[in-house]
Amino acid sequence: MRDYRIAAIPGDGIGTEVIAAGLQALAVCAERDGGFRLAVDHFDWGSAYYKKHGVMMPADGRDRIRGHDAIFFGAVGAPDVPDHVTLWGLRLAICQPFDQYANVRPTRILPGITSPLRAVSGPELDWVIVRENSEGEYAGVGGRVHQGFPYETATDVAMFTRVGVTRIMRYAFRLAQSRPRKLLTVVTKSNAQRHAMVMWDEIAAEVAAEFPDVTWDKMLVDAMTMRMVTKPESIDTIVATNLHADILSDLAAALAGSLGIAPTGNINPERAFPSMFEPIHGSAFDITGKGIANPIATFWSGSMMLEHLGETAAAARLMRAVERVTADPRLHTPDLGGSATTAMVTDAVCEALVGDNS
Ligand code: IPM
Ligand code: MG
Image (cartoon, rainbow, N blue to C red; front, side, top):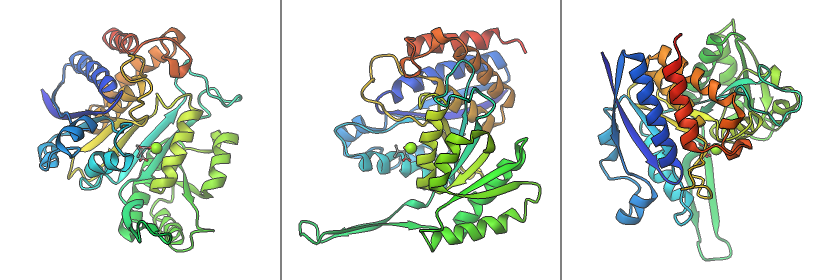
């Protein structure tokens, strides 16, 4: 029996609802598989914890989860706590020290789901965005001076290191190589940002030489948004900086039907630290407590987690169950235009898992 220890951090808002749903599906998935067990430890870190203790997680928080095999994360963000506090106090406080430098964001139009792109139904849109997750515009470098004076000044400096860019390029080229089309688009903005983005392009070309079987091209980020809408079929794997990929991945999620579907993995490829899997959508306080959050992004993130743990058969089975459920419009939550609840979707995925005999 293969045993895995999972750290569950539901966080804020609908994070608690979707992580509960995700853990329910993962438990059924493990039982159905029979070959592995998931031991889940729960951590109540987030904005409620912050209001009580003045910090988003305890000082030894990272040490408590360092030994786990993976982290299953919900969302952070609360209306009455500044966003930069919640983000830097918990999510980035895990991603950066655990060197989860590759943020992987697959996008597909799942069965039964309508894309806002009129001509696109499914196979035309099957992308993976690789987001640099450790530096760039999210490096946290900068400062504010002269606060309270008319000449107040603030900077956010985007930091790019040769090591950081090289490793994300290698990760992206390797991922592109593992996919049938072996096609990578390197997103850049080297026309306007003439230092770091020029180095980014140079390193992309250097790393490309190590992957002669991968076809690659370069695209300015603004033009990339147009290409995603007008020629989705021309894209397969994408690599972009932290901020560029943040923006492109919301566009990708919308084009695939809803942010409620989009999953992500914050990966430490060397496995020196646990990797973290989460839905992209965030805490969504407007629908918190209503029981209507879409759990599909969390199930898909759970499938990515199983894949990372090496449980590929179970990961595929969970995705098959998800696709059986999305194919039925009666099981669509309100973000997809339906009226199903989180519980209905979760029960249906669990039933599909039990009934999957392949
Ligand atoms: C994401 C989110 C986060 C980000 C927010 C919550 C700060 O938008 O994961 O894409 O910008 O990284
Ligand atoms: Mg985002």
